[in-house]
Length: 346
Ligand code: PGA
Image 1: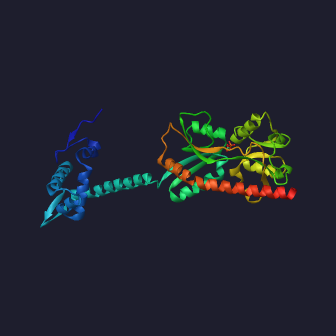
Image 2: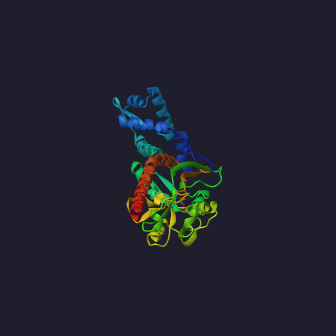
């Protein structure tokens, strides 16, 4: 039930008792408070009118209304100048707080719009973890106030996160069927290459038929992995099945296993850029490899892309040439390693 209004006998205002500020909210305006602040600061109605691009009668009228709402005179004349009354001083103090708060709010909102602050949640495939931190690093140097979280996982789990709207943006392969709820932007290439240890006999051969690999021990990623699906599909398309010696849930563990002589495996070239500079791994020249795939920048249409996420998306697209250059360099390095191994074996 609304409280019944009470009448303040001293100034004839109507207020709702305990909620007296409600009266001021209804009977004063922010513009009037801004005027009062300017008059007190400048010591003159005329200068305040000039500063705020108003006529002097307008200023006088608004201060009269404010004074009626407050229920007391706000200024008094002292000789040719004016000064605030006690009530005017109190109102001025409150005005300063209110106007400061509003001005801080404006700055905060402008910061948000100007991307000085914000949050970015990114979900990426295990293969994108080799470049995502670098892109994020460059992004955060330009926008240092953005908090970033990066979730790295396999394709199946990325798809689950996408459906659950867990992150703002994803770096992943092409989502299966064309899904109307999902926006997909092609991004950097993600070639899948066949990898062996440099001392593997196949490392110094050219044009190896895929069938020859069925004789080898194969190291496969865990179920749910996009690489696993792509490799098995490539073998299946040729009526073949790899002989799986071991399943591992990590590209890094697979590289170690290859170096340790446990077998061969298909990996994203992105996961090998460091090793390409003459390590212990070689790419096999196998028919049907590399499997040329692409990453995509993906987000759910069901949820509006935040300004931060949209800015990151554009930033990542601009960054793509760097990623391609890194891949090209890795390719060239591995080609040199192969030529060297062929020359040594011959
Ligand atoms: P995965 O995906 O981590 O699910 O194997 C990687 C990829 O497809 O590049």
